[in-house]
Structure formats: C-alpha cells, structure tokens
Image (cartoon, rainbow, N blue to C red):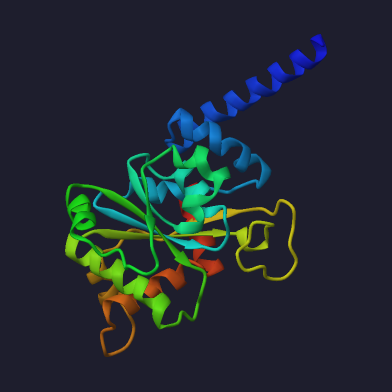
Length: 240
C-alpha cells in the first residue's frame, strides 16, 4: 500500500514538474499545461513552432487542418486561453474532450450554416482570437470550399491576420479521421505554422500575373503549411 502511494506521488510530482516546464517554455497556463503534458509525452510532440501562433498580434485567426480527433484537444491546450474555438458538431459532442473544452470558450459550427457573422467580426476587431478547424481535403468540393470563403471574408472584414497550423503525424494515429498508410499507437507529432498574414498579403504574395480570389489565396497558404520542407525550415528557425 505504501509503495503504491509512493509511486502515485512520484508520478504526480513528475506530471506537475512537466506542466510547470510547459508553462515556462510554451506560455501556457497551469490548467492547459496539466492537460497537455500527457499528450506531449505520449506523442513526443515537437511544438517549437507554436511560438509563432502565440506571438501573433490580435486580431488573429488560427486556421487548423483537422486531420484527426486530436487537433481540437491539442489546440485548446496550446493556443492562448482567450481564443474562441469554432468546433464541428462531432468535437463539440465528444465526451472525452470535455476537460479540454473547459480550457477556452467554444462554439459549435453547424455545417448547414456558414459561420460568417457580425458577432465574430466584432470579436476580432476587439483584439480577439479565433481558431477554426478545416477538413483534411487537398481537393475540397464546392461545399467544403465555402468554409475557406467564409474564413477569408471574416478575416478581410476584421483586417485580421491568419496563422495556418498543421499537426504532422496525427493522420497516422488511431485518432485519424482519414487513415493513410500504416497506423501507429503513438506516432511522433510535429506542430508547424506559417507567419501571420492578412488576406490582402496572401493575395499579393501569389505567383502569376492574375491575382487570386481571397479564398484561393487562403487555400494555397493552408496547403503551404503542410509541405514538409516549409515545416522543417520554420521549426529550425524557431529553435535557433
């Protein structure tokens, strides 16, 4: 009995020590760090790039590729606590996400109603932060692409910067929404980001003689964050 209590005490002490380290290194609050620590250890998450997201001046939209059931939990634990997360109905109703949803304010996105609203624009203009989760589809159909148009419109109206975020490795986990290749019990994860840009800046950066539409520029930016070479360069720069 004494041995079991001592072992439990040692595990708790290590957990709290890891959480304290994450508070200092990643700018998390204690509640976030306590819930993030087990995921960090289990999936050996390389998360240096999250500093780019924390450093983005509001108004800002975090646009996250939603490739598994884990992205909402990870982002709720890693992004600034004042971020409003717009979750799909599946994530909003998952019982195991309850502790993570308590970390920040969340609202449910109903696919039948695109979430462009004056309320979200007002929140951003008031130096707010939003996190939106985009379906894992490099060739989205017309219905899915409506999400990119909605986000581009919100960002443009609020003059907000957009930070693309991709968690590499989640597609190989048991939590993947679209399993690809071999699946592993606990694959390594790596968070990659790109620098915050407004929609106007994304359009200006596009190649070619013709300027793309706002939604197309946003989509290309989201594809860019998934390129391994871009993620490696970003992480190397932040780790330096």
